[in-house]
Length: 190
Image (tube, rainbow, N blue to C red):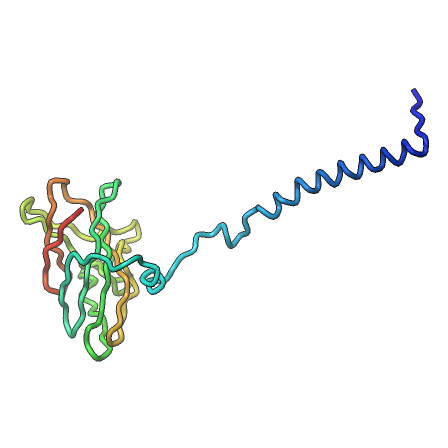
């Protein structure tokens, strides 16, 4: 079978082919433009200072415990997680007029925790009604599930902190928060 195109037919075929190719290109181009870049795929992590700046309004303070030389820890949330944990968040601050080293004793005295540096690994929750003490959780390498790498705070400075504990029973709504060298304080769990 022989197909014969006149001069006008060949031009029409070339125009149709170029439109089809251009149409395919037009479809592909927006897909490339809408494709997320590597930087937009990565979740943006903020520093504690940036998190504080973006915080909407003042956060509620559940407790403030005073420590040595003007150090204070303020707890802003103590929430039960679905996995059976209690996550506590707050700020460790230096209310004095001079720089303060974070005491190593806040890490506690367990060898596995201490070898990972200064942390809040010595913190405990005490349920006086249930007569139980809950320690900061550790991972399989013995690292405490809490803020680590604490060394010192300048005058008037603070840093965001967190600690994760096994959750007391749902009937326990109040515990004593204890951190070595800091005064104990009552904490309501949500």
